Image (cartoon, rainbow, N blue to C red; front, side):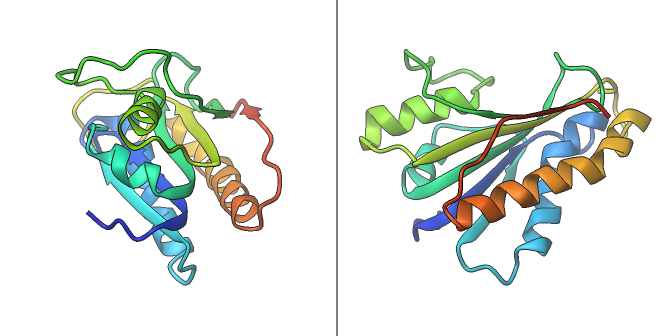
Length: 167
């Protein structure tokens, strides 16, 4: 694992073979290209978040978690600050959240990023196929804009506001 401290870690989760669930990795790939010239930005995409990621999160100034939200309207974009969970999750879970990873950082590394945000795009189609539903496809441009603006504000150490947009 790359433990060189970075200013902004972008950490995506999702399955690119399950329709809208792949929006997190898709945004991470876009960000990797978009910020390739910025030494302070690192992008990681996984099918699921695992406890080993806590070490890298603990060594970064800011983290942006990217995911699809099954509990939001398809295409709806949310950017919210993340705090650690009150309790550690069970280590054998397959459903770690951004808050759970932050709890691991606090407990095992006694460190938290200065800034932590979760950027989600609501999804509605999770069947076995590649590509996105029409509402998610229509939201990609706005989601890229929110991600880019957030990264640039974090790199400039400027305040970041919560976002909620309906596509």
